[in-house]
Image (cartoon, rainbow, N blue to C red):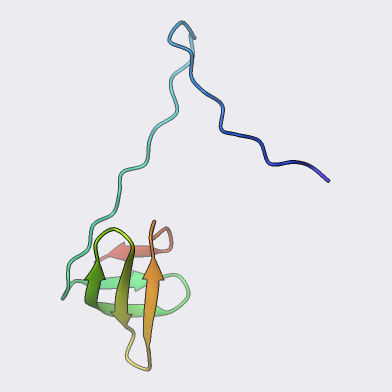
Length: 73
């Protein structure tokens, strides 16, 4: 069994580029979104940086941060 390792740190003297830090996605109530699993929806409520409550028509789903599978339309 392989043990999970910590992310590698970038040394300032390295000739290679530092890894890009992903930007945080921001959503507001009323925004139209698409989700890889649930499809099209509308943001109903927002918990500051923690989760979004999204109405997908047939059901409401709480999507937690970092919102990898959700995009703003």
